[in-house]
Length: 96
Image 1: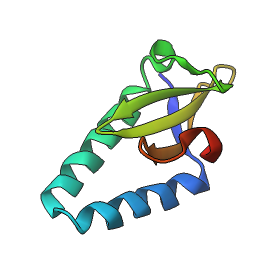
Image 2: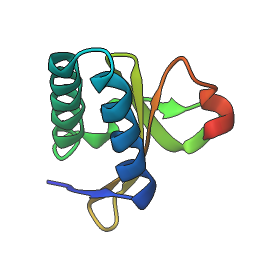
Image 3: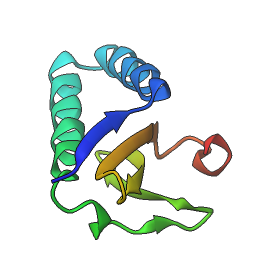
């Protein structure tokens, strides 16, 4: 089993997602944050199941409710590093 590690930028990403969604609907915020967390936690068991990001192949990616989770798998240390969570409507290529 792999350990999940969040880089500092992800905390800011999650805060921004929460702030933006709360303007729309608090229940939606809870639903999306829960889904993001569940997807991230699922990486503990099978982190290689999602594809490499073509523009930066050191990262893998998966989408949840229009948000994209970018992560690295460190097999030698059995760690999955979560690097960014970005809304798919943003300029993802340049933000990565």
